[in-house]
Length: 101
Image 1: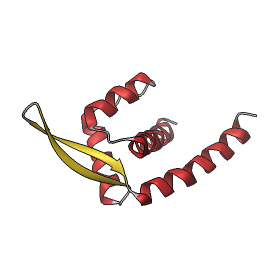
Image 2: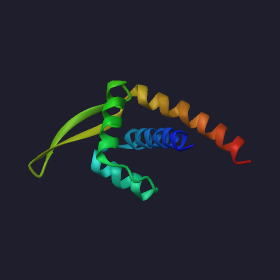
Image 3: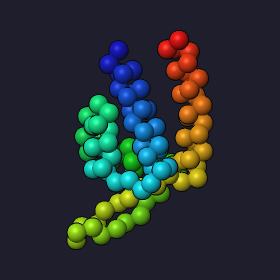
Image 4: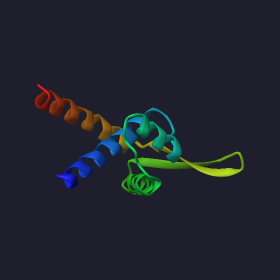
């Protein structure tokens, strides 16, 4: 049961990342705080590989900015990421209507 919970949890995290990255540029620490606000206590060792994988898969693009002397990576959803999010929303809506009826 724990393995399936982790798989679903990480899927929720990916959708949450896409949702926010489609609205505005995000960065790792900010996303960890956002996820924590919703009850997801995720470590950098889990979040950053997810962000990198989503970038490699073409769902996120990266831009660098220097903030207070530190180089920060900002992620935004690509067109592919936005399309994926639109499809995911349809599937989430359908699933929640069925499962939570």
